Image (cartoon, rainbow, N blue to C red; front, top):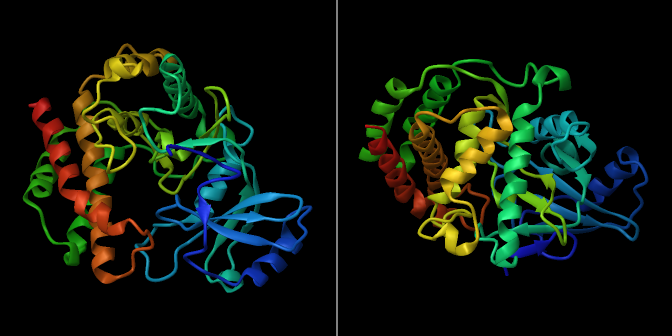
Amino acid sequence: MTADTGANEGASAVRTRFDEAALARWMTDNVAGFSGPLTVEQFKGGQSNPTYRLTTAHARYVLRRKPAGELVKGAHDVLREARVLTALAPTPVPVPPVLGVCDDDDVIGTAFYVMALVDGRIFWDATFGDVPREERAAYFDAMNATIAALHRVDPGAVGLSDYGKPGNFFARQIARWTRQYLDDADAGRDAGMDALIAWLPGAIPDGDETAIVHGDFRCDNMIFHPSRPQVLAVLDWELSTLGNPLSDFAYHATMYRMPPDIVAGLGGADPVALGLPTETEYVAAYCARTGRDGIPDWDFYIAFNFFRLAAIFHGIKGRAIRGTANSAHARERAAAYPRLVALALEAMERCR
């Protein structure tokens, strides 16, 4: 099944356990209207930060927590997620309401936050196969409108002027993911990654922009209305920061080239046959919404994003080797890493 209903599907037995009684006591003191007893289930999503459905007789919640164990510096920062969700709540960007934040590791073992559960559908298949063909383009347009709305938000106006470093986004990001790749000796080296690391810094396009960027904007990180093409909530803000909006949009648009068995993607499919806009049409719609004539050097942004994703999967590979990966699919993702490198290299060659 490709579409999950937020209220009724996608959660099962708890894989990463914690003190549920301690959580209930904290929620009694910190979440308005909370009353137990509390039932806890774990969502199949939330690959990086364990995510849980919390149910009482009168309400339903979602909890996001840091994973246990040794973590990469700056990663899995659920408190940053809570901050950006709170800041975006009054904007046109649809986000779930944050109801409580806990920075005390002693409560359940790690920091966490609690938000309202948003009823709707999550599509794990980028073809939107559960939607009638004639309606699918509208769902793509809803995603396009949502990311464009995010990039139009003024960070200073919502209290996020210090949410990241403005300027030189690509140089800083290339350096960051290069360091993460090089520092993980357990996961090993790759000739393709080494070639990308050598090419990317000198290929950065001229010009710079700064906006709030999601960092992992794709269809399975959104909750859609139960029956119409409307995004009700954007989820999983772990990688959000201030950055270049073209990077964020290009990451989203990698779905057109992404093999569907890695993350939700259309790689190998014919968008027209599926009733979907082409990659070119999708880029044009974003440009129209954000006042652009076009996006020169488009394949640089695609290459950068496949490189970044490859670096993330390289890190998952290292954690799988060390036995510290929290996702049940960590070894599958580690195995997919070489294909992401290959997709980055293909986009790099298109730039030459």
